[in-house]
Amino acid sequence: MILARSFRVQPGDPARLERRLGRPLDLPLGAQVVLVTGLDEGLARTLGGQGDAAVLAQGQPAPELIDRLLTPSAPLLHLRGDVVRFDDRPLVMGIVNVTPDSFSDGGRHDTTGAAIAHALTLLEEGADWLDIGGESTRPGAAPVPADEECARVVPVIEGLLRRVPGAIISVDTSKAEVARRALAAGACVVNDVTALGDPEMAGVIARAGASACLMHMQGTPRTMQQDPRYDDVVAEVANALGASLERAVVAGVDRRRLLVDPGLGFGKTLAHNLELLRHLDALRALGAPILLGASRKSFLGAITGAREPSQRLVASTATIAIAAALRQADVVRVHDVKATREALAIACAVRSA
Image (tube, rainbow, N blue to C red; front, side, top):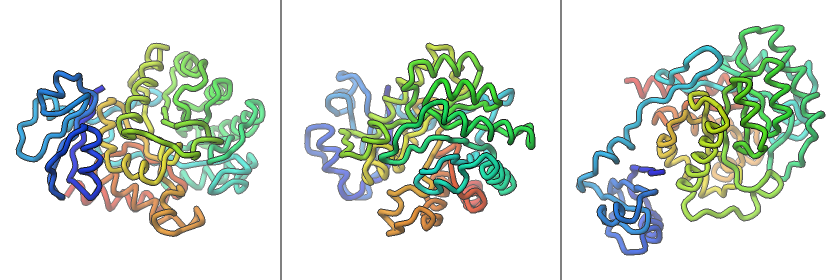
């Protein structure tokens, strides 16, 4: 898969790009460049590169292919019977953790009644859909048996739909059996942090005619932050997500019902997370809407010094607003819906002006 990334050279970029190409480059700070990866060797050499990559500096003629990759068409998402367009603003996915141990709000909504009440509040604050999860995926989290996970999420889904019949609900699970029961209860999206790690998952989604978000994770929640490494985090995440998309389509899932999530904080260092945020537009080559999950995550605290997740509101909304202003995210998964909607209103007003 060919990825094109356009950016201005910052400190550290020349050395990184030289390692990628295996030769010296004359790239002054502030220069506009395009990094293209996933090329065959012949085309890479034609563009002055090496291996599978080439760097085009400002002023060099860019082939029509690269121009097209840098200006992809806006993605669409088929959600239930509707076609969602992302021309206005990103959709806001409100997080409902029916868990005792989630990193930010574990234990606050771990009963059916408390989870439903919280979900209704998020809808009142402007959530476009709700993501119901019954298993924590924080670093070091232990797995939860499928029956226990279902006991947590299915009553919440059923209770919510009795109160708000038209609510859009996704189930945050990596287990095919949990997804099957949640979809039968009325959820219409599967949010899978393992991107079809369960070999039965794609078939469950296909048979239900559901939508799905496929997220990248290196390792498992127990191991993912134990020295994660990449040669090129953007290319490797994009290639892995592309492979997951193809597995889903082969299993019968409608490609128009699929989203991708780069998985910030899931097997990534601070530098990896920032590199992905800087080049989210590269994921447009996958042809699927992009879901961004940065809310309250620890890498934001590493930058701002906010040790407690609840203290990362400003950092979370700032990250989301930047991505929205640059049209680099189509759905944002958040804990703080009201503040996010306000930040998005400003970002999209500036973008439209």
